[in-house]
Length: 452
Image 1 (cartoon, rainbow, N blue to C red):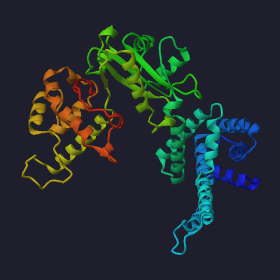
Image 2 (image 1 turned 180 degrees about the horizontal axis):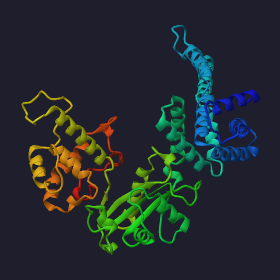
Image 3 (image 1 turned 90 degrees about the vertical axis):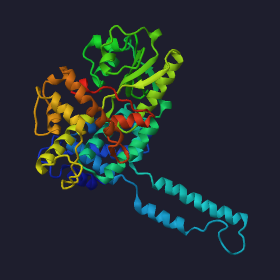
Image 4 (image 1 turned 90 degrees about the horizontal axis):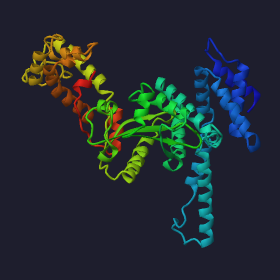
């Protein structure tokens, strides 16, 4: 790397930045350490260089990290001119035995094949971007795998703001590498218990993403009798589970998570016939898209089957986080269209907008309007349902009559959301998509009392 090139890159990184918490001299050090980490061949000083780069990276502002990562993606990409030249050479070779002339000798065939192997080897090397060296060296460096996870988390944050093609290619490459380095063979399945170090238990509390752990009593209950918690650990990230899952051993499959969290005391383990997976949490945002959960569930099922022969049923009890947002959006838009066009729900009326649909059945409308009078009002049934679901105190949940009226449409629309609403051919709901990929079968439980 030439000194003037470093200066040019520093100018790029600070371009249009009104406030920089990073002096240009320090940015130069980070750039030089990154370049050295990629280009150095002297392994005896490599650890020191990698330390300098990771420490320097953490000292950068988010904006400077973004510019550094964009530079890494562009300047350390593969050499496409070299790739094109090699492809031209490859296409210019004649396949052994492909000529119409007299058959070639064994020596000629060997020479021809040797040329193919040489160019193929050179192509494989040329098709590897230079930043692969950085990733691989960090992976074998103490703390490097954790750093790569943080690096990718930053990349994903940037891509959520703007789709930068070169950065997306870098992310795809890093994701493939992480998927290989975090294969199930490299991971340790660990049963987390109350006897584990406090530092590990603190991480369970901090990273629980589905059902927050309220206090130590709650934590002890989830790790105690009738409960299990398993996590995947990696030797390069000691004392910190990459992902963990919570399991309830029960006589029957619970219909609500309240049965699991508030089951005190739990059923004796010897009487349990069902293992219910009620929470799974990933601790590393940078490992998004790397399906550790699928492998974890399969490993836990195998372990529980072996240790508890009385368990015959395995199920997940999962929230449907996107359902409410989808339903409220549907209700708001359809209510507005209905009001604007004065549609009367007549099957013969085709004058309305093709985007309008009455998402409630006639009998559902009648039951809802009759049962909701004392709680809310609206111009139409969809507005009434919208008002109920967005009410701040959900007093309506105490009305058995209203709950009975709400159950059929909420269950039917939830089934539609899970079965019919798609994004790129997959279930629109991320949780549903995760479980369906694992071979799950949908079973809806009552949603009315917990919909709020």
